[in-house]
Image (cartoon, one colour):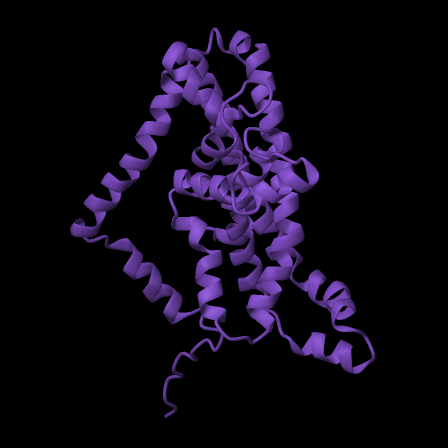
Length: 283
């Protein structure tokens, strides 16, 4: 009499383990469910309130005003320019942090990421002390070249790049650490210089990480407020970006502030939708 065949375990891990995962998902502990739902409500209710209280009837007239378009145009241009600055300087910095060994690398990494947790107003004050007319570097720029950066459109770009570049550096450095350095080493053994190996081998490998970091930096630059108003001021048509216009309109015209906030909300949703394949997994 032959023994009944035992079920063969699926080596791919798709059989029993998957059923056990599904079984675990069925039961949700109440101590986790209630705080999770409260956290979801805490994050979503303010956004829903923005949509509910939006002046939909007067929204077209609000969005077509000259002040709104000036702020929107300046925000898009300055955020794009700040992202370009972050790409030019941030990608080489990320490569240095990921591929080279030098004394104090951990300290440099901490200082580079400091703007992530530094209050933006403090960043604006630091920029004034460094690049202001009487700043450590700014006084020489003014004396030698006649360049004044504070309270100008260029100052907006610098303030936004200061707070946005760490997002790009972190994303690119993480991608570089995950990439196999042997491809770059193989290219150098075949006669390519280190820069050529980076440009033709490493850069195509880390392109998704660079793109994700650039999108994050652009979104952060678009929403920057504290460093911009401190270092560049709030002059309509010259330094007034969308967040600054929202702040000013909230004091005089709340409906215009809501309309401007809806634009920034739509941009943020678009950024998250563009990054969902990289950062989000399907349910």
